[in-house]
Amino acid sequence: MKLEAIIQVKNVHKSFKSVHAVRGIDLEILPSQFIALLGPNGAGKTTLVEMIEGIQKPDKGEILISGKPWKGNEKEFRRIIGLSLQETRFIDKLRLFETLRLFASFFGLGAERCEEVMNLVGLEEKRQAYVVNLSGGQRQRLALGVALLNKPRILLLDEPTTGLDPQARREVWMILKKLKDASATSLILTTHYMEEAEQLCDYIVIMDHGTILKEGTLRDLLGKSSADIEEKQEYKGPPRNLDELFIELTGRHLNE
Amino acid sequence: MNKLKNSQLWQLILANARELLREPAVLFWGIVFPILMSLGLGVAFTKKKDVTVTIAVIGRNHLVHAPSDSISLIQTFLLRNKAELRVGKDGSLSRELTVPDEKLGGTRYIFRDMSWKKAMVMLKRGNLNLVMDESNAKIQYQFDPMNPDAQLTYLKFSKLMKDPDLIIKSSETEIRPLDVTGTRYIDFLVPGLICMGVMMSCMWGVSYDIIEKRSKKLLRRMIATPMKRSNFLVALITVRIAMNFVESGLLFLFAWLVFHITIQGSVPALILFFISGNIAFAGIAVFLSCNTAKTEIGNGLINLVSMPMMVLSGIFFSYHNFPGWSIPVIQKFPLTMMADGVRSIFIEGAGFGEIMLPTLIMLVIGVVFFTAGLKLFKWH
Image 1 (tube, helix red, strand yellow):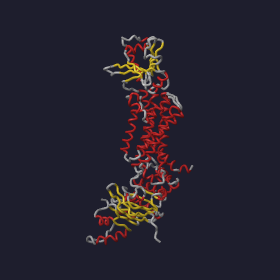
Image 2: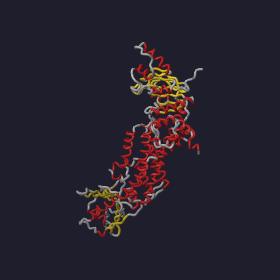
Image 3: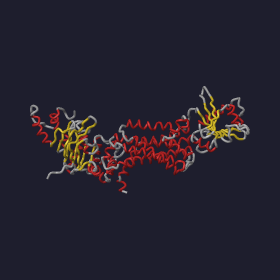
Image 4: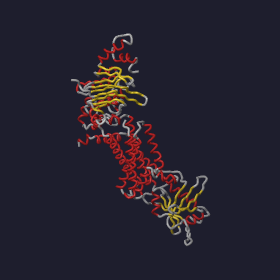
């Protein structure tokens, strides 16, 4: 039996003045699926995620969560979505546990759930630390903890490891891997780190200039692409990784 | 109890209170700075000379000489110096005398005929600082000896009296220090400082806080949860008003201990009026911060609104020193309205009756600006 998609993105367009950020994207995310939106800066990943999280409205097309549109269902959706934005800063002078308590209260949750989440993201030792005194990696883990407070069915993470050192990045990955094993949460993760997409996600969407260049599992992407490019240029063998694939598709590196 | 602890409004209030109290600058600017200001200005206040000074003339009508009356010393002085008679719109009489002085600048004296009671009200409002009375063929000068402005007015005026052409001898004059509560400069200053504190606290504590949270994308993060948007604003304003009560209370306590300031009017009326003033400024603050995410713009907007009021609304000196045409405009500023009302309770003994209209006006200001701000409010 085919699983019903928890998120459906149907021919979605979004422009900001003369900039076409998203141009006709179709996408379906299944329950428990971990999806990576991979692309360079300006690819339209964040705009797409913002539309999925209901902050931006598409100019054209529609987005359905559990088969329902945002309009009229906002309250319900806010309860099942967890998110971590790019560059969110919490209140500097609140302690870590107080920050969790504050956000937990928005979902009607108490201290018990905060303790669980604090353990999940490995920040028990920093319980009494002010947010301002946390390192970049610890802040990102706090943001992830806040996103997980309500045991979300949909988790949206916008570049959760950008700017972190390799060790801190791996700590975030470990948390997400544990989450994947232990829950039915669907994840949409935007990133421009190949390794992140490869390590965490079972479906990868490569975006550039507001469109989807290619999508599929890692194996599909690395296997299929050679056939696509064979006709256009001299065949040099299949790409060994996503970085090579991206160069083949666009002629430039992801980080450019 | 657990339900309250887990309620989002309670947690928002706690978060705002913690944020506020854990910022050492708040303690300085909110509590220590106004106290230092009141101390500095109250003890060692000096101000440039007044160009125009108003002097109250008490008792029988000294400004116009009726043929049936014997001529008084004050009348003699005014007539000899050819002080010009003026009739106000309300029929009140005054005489004006301009004394040129090349070194110190000229001074225009306005002598107003009025009752003792009216003179005291005007004195407390800072509209005049010298009262003249004549009885038993003696001119009495009454003023607050601790008020440098009053001293200056007296000294300038007594210099005129030494004119050899005048028949008034020094034995015919007498100084009487005014000891009526509420007539000192510090009595005028402290209510003004309290009101200015409320305005600044709302502007920076509400407006700037919202803009900063928006610029940090924290507002956006919060509304991505089931948080009720009204709870966020209610919590922010509640904490700010509570803090304003503490700050103002401490300033008053200090002024009471050091300068023996008292509240002569109704304390419940003062509390009501204080809350309405807070609501007015909180509403304005929400309106100011409703749209921008740039702290630089927020800075500019806050200064644009608060600076003119700080200068014009009669916090440090009476706004009656400004040109006559500007006074009706100045009186409509929320800070002027609040300072006038708080002063009337502190030093004129006003109660609910006197402050009801300004209370309503300030509540309306608060509600209108808050509603407009909410309509235009950008959460991300």
